[in-house]
Image 1: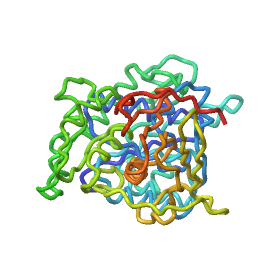
Image 2: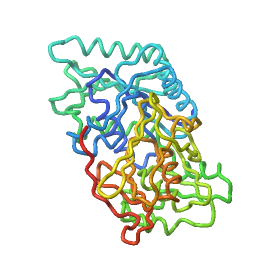
Image 3: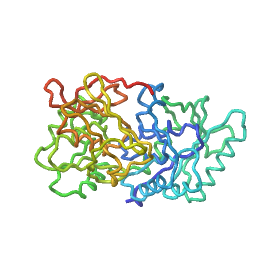
Image 4: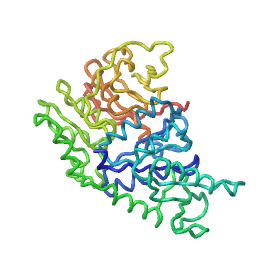
Length: 396
């Protein structure tokens, strides 16, 4: 499949506005119904949630890191077997070893900003990034000049016809205008694959005995033009889920949607589509307390009001689904309500939920944009699936 689906690299020096541009592009492509995935090919890459919450809280939640050969290998493996068109966030300071990531991309958009008190910085940075693309045989499909102050315009001051300017690429800003729209149009042409055809391809990879759920398509059939599930719609969604057979879930959606579906089918196999890994079955995690010195994976269990809060984080750059023994789940007092929090992949959240569902009174997944946790399972008649529990985690 990697020969069919494009992988468009978004590159440029630090502080040029790449993260804001990537978020704006992926949002616009979703509105155009272009199936794709943003691959954070740098260890400090930020998820979309960064642009959906109060900006004064972002730095308290972000996880920073550094490149390692293992991380680079994982990124290359993802690119080789990509099951969707990709936008690839490569960070701002790649080393020569990390350039091997570039060679698996099919095109590049370079975003270069000017630096105050250094008039020659733009030309140097542009040459540096163009040379890296040339060395790795990556066609440059657009060069964008990032300007934090001026209005968007189609040509820069030097009148180079291949150079476009975007302005005000600040976190939380809304990118729009003719330059941005021209880039979106160009990407939509190269990345557009009929969405239902993609779903049919992935469905054909499953056993006929597995019930297939296409989340965005089902949301649109139920009347949501944006095809996003809301917490109060979970009950309607679960009515479409059979309770007597395995299910497979496909499509971009919130982690609490996947968790609720996985818990609705407890007792039967649950398969989910991961844009990096393809079809996967969430693993079974070992149950033991955190071991001193094990820094790749940290869990903290603490009281929260009359319930428990399980915070899960990683000091590593990548959690390997094939190494569950490195991701232990702590022992938790039974028959308690548990709020789950942490920047972890969907498959890991689902794995945790499926292991806790038989012992806990209810489970809820914390969502920073909602300032609340979404109930995904409940044995409490006064607490319904889809209900929001207000949560304000302390700023750290």
